[in-house]
Figure 1 (cartoon, one colour):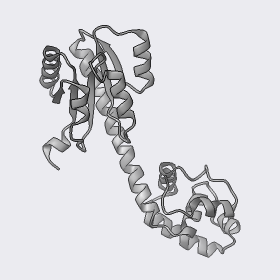
Figure 2 (cartoon, helix red, strand yellow; figure 1 turned 30 degrees about the vertical axis):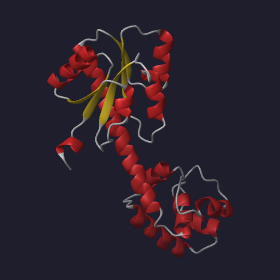
Figure 3 (tube, one colour; figure 1 turned 45 degrees about the vertical axis):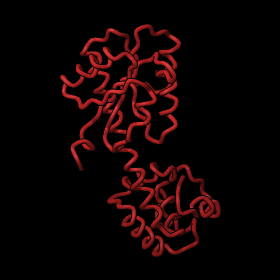
Length: 226
């Protein structure tokens, strides 16, 4: 992986050239890799790199303002965490931004310590979100390798049922359940039941699946989990 892809990136979006330079420089001095954009449109048109990132965004900009930018980013599967900056904010805008998932809402002029603290939190949030997405992607890929019967065993096992209970639920022998369960563990890359439960949580199945075997077959009979 290249340096550009692996190094966290802080994007600064502001239509005021002098403020854009000042904030970018302050962050660069603090050791961050910075990309500067003079409009929301320029920011949205940037190539999306697979690296942790966040954006420091001015609230009031022509054409697409900060809140409209936030709405557009929220439509993505992996929205960029935002730190808002404004010279004349109001309570309503602040509430909207924070309800929309903003990391912070800061007022200009902002202190270096306050800005850097917010950026650190935003990057940490993005790293965690990326880690969770990778875990979900791995679980989904592994799940597609399970047979329909293995998916049934998977769902029942992660609800805490014992092998003999699973056997009774599905109308098969306990020995067959053990064989299926071993295959499920291997294919899902699980070393323990706890690992398997975590995979079920990623997939949105497990203890949320109701008991009857016919309904399990209907729910788990698909190759993918949405």
